[in-house]
Image 1: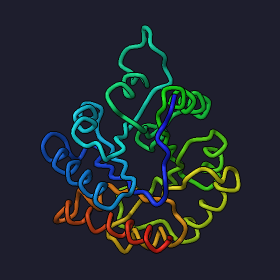
Image 2: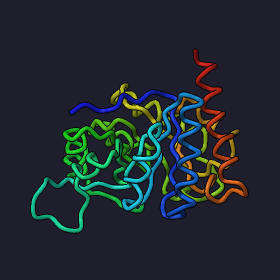
Image 3: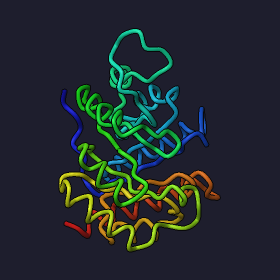
Length: 231
C-alpha cells in the first residue's frame, strides 16, 4: 500500500497526554496552518481518541499515532489495529517509545505491519547501539533520544547527536534520523539541524512554554529557514 514520502528537514509536535480536547485541537490547527505556510513536513502525534478529528480537520499535518500493535483483523481486543489507524486518516506511527517499549522480536513485525497498511514508522532508540539495531528493521525514521533526558532541560550532547546520525546511516542511509530530548527553543532546533539531524521532535519545550503556539511557530520557522539554506 502506498505511503507518504517523507522529506527532511521535518518537525514533530508530540503533545503526548499533556493536551486533549480543545487545547489540543487549537495547537493542531495552528500547526496545520504553519505546515501549509512553510511547506515543511510536520508530524503531529496525539492520543488515540483524538486522531480521527485531527486527521479530518488538519489536512496539512502528518497525523501520527503514539503506538500501534502488530495484530491483524480478528479477535484481538484492547490493542491498536494498523488498519483502523489507516482508515481514519493516520499516516504515521511511533513505536518503541520509552513509555511504551516493544520487545525487539515483536518490533520487527510491528514495523512490517505498518508498511503493509501504508503507515510511516518512527522507531525510538535510547542509545547508539539501539539506533543501529533499529536501522536494521527498516523504519522510515529513527528517533535518537536518551531516555534519561526525556522531559528535561538538557539536550543530547553534540557527540551523541553526530554519532547516532553517522552510525544509523552507516546501516541504512535512507533512514531519516530525528533528534529529541531537552529542546527548549528555536536555537536548539537550529543547532540540531546544523549538526546533521533530519528532523527534531518536541514535547515539553512547546506544551510547557509560556506561549505554546508562539514557541511552536518559532521552532517551525527555524526548520523552514534551515530548509531554505540547504537549497
